[in-house]
Image 1 (spheres, rainbow, N blue to C red):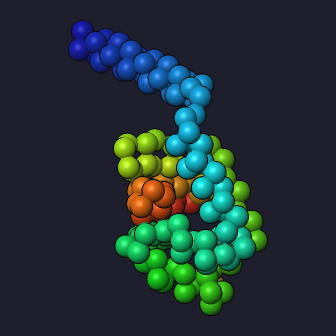
Image 2: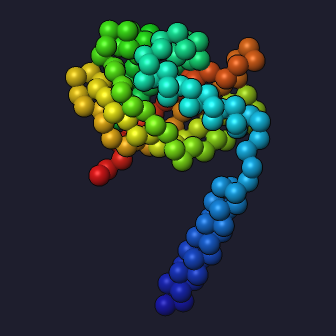
Length: 153
């Protein structure tokens, strides 16, 4: 019984600390780098809707990796070709709940996207949670990896 009580107390203490930390993180003002990456992520969403492959090319590393919601692995060259051919076509791509964490010349952006469009012949409309990794290369932030998961309805 003492073990169960101790486990409950530890769980509650850990949960309280985690919730307090999350609240503190959300209220903290964003620094210059975080603002820059938030804007870059918003610009990337607009480029996705416009099919702006020049923007996507310029802001993505050559060794970029995309893991789709279905688990497919795609390279930068494949993604750009898919946009150009119309295999990927979005009519809407809205972002919210963006969180940016910076670790020197590496940053991780997480968030939620609400998408409307088609990808590889499939309806891609819905909400997704995503993680994007950026690296600072030659003074500019570039996406090196992206993973997206559809939110269950």
